[in-house]
Image (cartoon, rainbow, N blue to C red; front, side, top):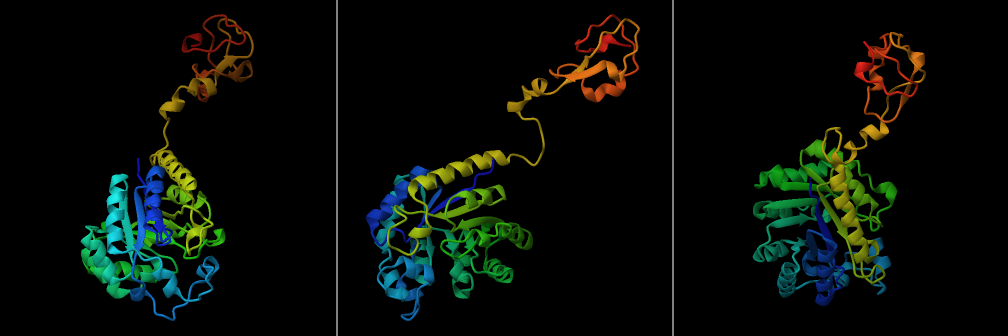
Length: 339
């Protein structure tokens, strides 16, 4: 059975408070996620002072400040914070992961022993960033929000030229709108990515609710990433498009069920249904009395349950044969009843 890697994306939903970050680790572990993921950055390394917020960030931030820098500055985690959170995740038996948004942050994660890297959608055209990650990572997942296929291919090519192989790359279909409207999800793009690039695919979800990531697993996603929060009404850029803990738990449970339901690429009788074959199917029975040596015609037969006798598919074999003895209406035919 396939195991979908589920990444519970805490991101910056800790609001800069390490105690909230610890709670988010607890929630993700209790829900059954494989990884808890944060974001690693220094505001001064990723935005200029005049970089404006996205529309969804403006709606979520009540400060009235239209620039990204101060918002992001409040959401930074220090190196010591990372050490504490990675250790706490290990205590809770969940893997720690964080998305680096700049070159220094890649080094910070490397110093923590992390070799599994996530390329966020906004960095997919950042050549120096891609080159560095490809040289140091054991495994990479790449989000592709706001991308055309040629941009995804270019990013993967950079990875391949700098030491990674396709079997260590998973490309996540993604839409970078928070929340993503259903008509823009386009889950079918996963197959396009898989067929065009020849890599494993997954899905990073920003829709409201849980049905889309569950559907993505049914369509072949091997990795699911989903934002979650302690409170969807909290102030901050990503809370609104995040699941709350109980919803995360339900989503993960549903995905684990879907994994079992996918099964094998082969139509077969399952063990659970085998016992119902004779109950649900039919056998050839007599509609009328038949005397010994009387010819069996179609008009004298009826198909009735149970299906533990001669199958109706054998009608051509039975019709025209002669009864070996007197048989009453309702009798279930056996091979010894005719010759």
